[in-house]
Image 1 (spheres, rainbow, N blue to C red):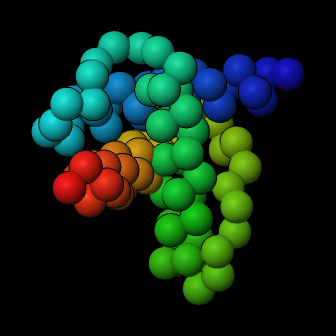
Image 2 (image 1 turned 180 degrees about the horizontal axis):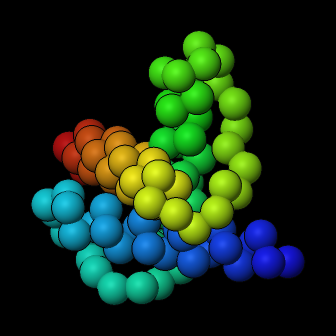
Length: 93
């Protein structure tokens, strides 16, 4: 149960930071979309990190609430935001 709570908190922090970094109209604040964005970002970032360091994609597990975890989740969330914005622009044409 504490692992799920840690993922939600980490996801919220990563999602908020990523939204502040990436320009656009994603909206701000803490909501369920921000948390989901951060959690998805944590998986994307963790997968990319394991691919770069180990050569294989390993799904991340909760490594704790520390700077490397937050940084990895934020980078992943930024990637997810950019991909989402590109998809949104293509579909709105």
